[in-house]
Amino acid sequence: MVFSFIIPVYNRPDEIDELLQSLVLLDFENNFEVVIIEDGSSISCEHIVEKYNKDLKISYFFKPNSGPGDSRNYGMQNAIGDYFLILDSDCILPSNYLKEVEKALKNEFVDCFGGPDKALDSFSDIQKAINFTMTSFLTTGGIRGGSEKIGKFQPRSFNMGLSKSAFEASKGFGNIHPGEDPDLSIRLWNLGYNTKLIKEAFVYHKRRIDWNKFYTQVNKFGKARPILNKWYPKHSKITYWFPSLFCIGFILSLFFFIFSISIFIKLYFIYFVLLAINALIETKSIKITSYVVIATTIQFYGYGKGYLTSFFNLKILNKSPEKAHPELFFKLK
Image 1 (tube, rainbow, N blue to C red):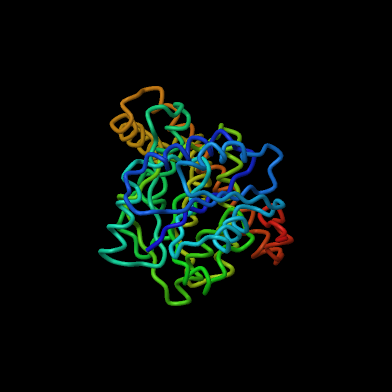
Image 2 (image 1 turned 90 degrees about the horizontal axis):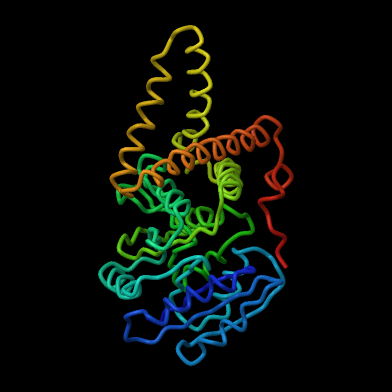
């Protein structure tokens, strides 16, 4: 099995430098390939890639901007491996990453897998808080790799493996973003392929983000989910409504509190206390714990608002996904 790392990048040369350095340090005896796809960047990373020509088998491609999904497809079309390892440019790999992937695939081969993400000590406190919020069972239910108790795992494209045969059969990623990774997972299931979580194949996901960018990101996640539900109704779940119901419930609890009915607001208080206790145990930092509360609030509000907006546009106004939310679709070149 020959592995090809597929890494799209857009105006992030510093990230690529850190990621490639971690690839150099991988503890892996067999050869592997690295494919960098510059997605129409105005700040090129080609000079960074050239630094690693002696240490890595690396290819660099520049193409017009058409989004991360199309760029990953371009990379896989030009890769020489028979198994693709897809990473975001803001990831850093632990030295045992490839060994864990190879061991898991030899033990039980699967045509598509996903791995979790963690935070390095060097990450900022906000990055650590957002990482916790995106991976905690109390906030996302483990759907991003924090739990193995999932019927069908939907790999996320910041850390995903895909066989060449599955790529060729599925034609790879679509032009929606975000949402291109669950879209691919569902299409693979419909073609008879399986997916799974390889819990040991984690990455350090840096998430170059602030609160405003985080809101924009989760809001788009919320908008994308009703579109996926429309395309694949049998894979729709009531749990996708949770952030929206959480926000609506909070507003109603404030309304009842005005009339001296405090039980509902107390339930919200208990939830955030439990969240804070869990965050404090995990992070051992009061500051990061306070940021976790902020990040969770932003996540629920941003996702919930996006979900309701998209649901209204698709179900009530009967708009097409592309007309309702053109900001989620890249025009393929």
